[in-house]
Length: 191
Image 1 (cartoon, rainbow, N blue to C red):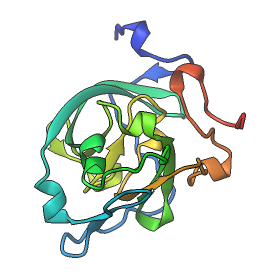
Image 2 (tube, rainbow, N blue to C red):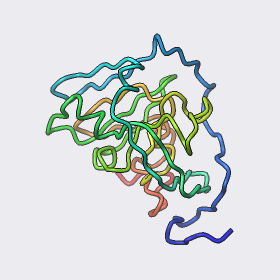
Image 3 (cartoon, rainbow, N blue to C red):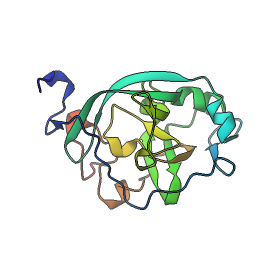
């Protein structure tokens, strides 16, 4: 398969498949009990039910995704709610510079607001026109295409806005705090 090498970071191989990788079991989804919270350094905390979240303005992005395990999948179209639109509901306070995205089973991903508020960060419920499978994060997965895919937390349940960065689930286990695939920020940490 011929690929545009400018779209593939160093150390990555292109695949048409979408490998399934996660730490724990796949959680069960109950729309009546599901909620999403925006909290921390915000003017107005915003709890949302599943129906409220799904009623938010929908968007599509097409992007490339890059896994820390060295695969890349090009041209994936995700549908959902842009992260900047979700955070706009709670009015982020000026001192917030980072976020922790909380997900099922105690999983958390950390990232700077630079990435979360970008035009290509989306809380997705569909990929390539189909609902995400439970193994890929149904009902809601954060997608941050500028970072390695472990930052794109599956089964997202909320965003906590914070002033100082703190390690998420994988960062506590030796992964890089930022995770830029173009700089091969896979493991270790310069901070």
